[in-house]
Length: 208
Figure (cartoon, one colour):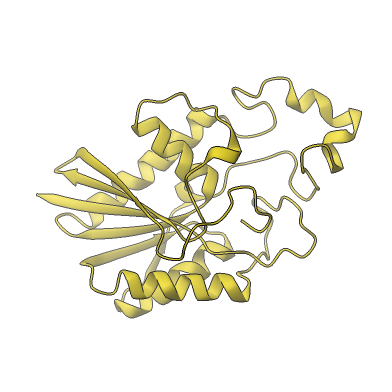
């Protein structure tokens, strides 16, 4: 029996301060992000969706809303889909700028392979995989859609593909409002399919 779990990255966020907002509350979709969510809703209109679940963060819930409404489904919430924890939340962290230039923050950067500044990659992969299997079970034989965030989705994908989890963030294939679709036969992963119904965006864009 085939079940598909679509991992949807949320749309663009209203972030005029251009900070790393992480799990901070109150960060909503921008107007462009709202359009991206509607575009995805149109793209999956003909899919056999029976379960829509999102990270508890506002931007993820807002991205899920038009999709759930189109399929007459309630939005479930799963903490396992939340953004990665990060000690630089609320700060400017562009390379060569902001908090990264301040010596008091340098000890946070000692181990980029874990990483030392936030939630370990392996912990992210494990909680995301738990959320995937909960969604798969809820949609058994049909399709589920999970709205999450760039780093958790990309970490999950690398874990499933057997690749090392530390990576160059500039090379993530996980555009705004993109779909990383996991195709299962029973409980066995058969295929990973990536698509960009709302178009390609730069992985370094602030507001993601």
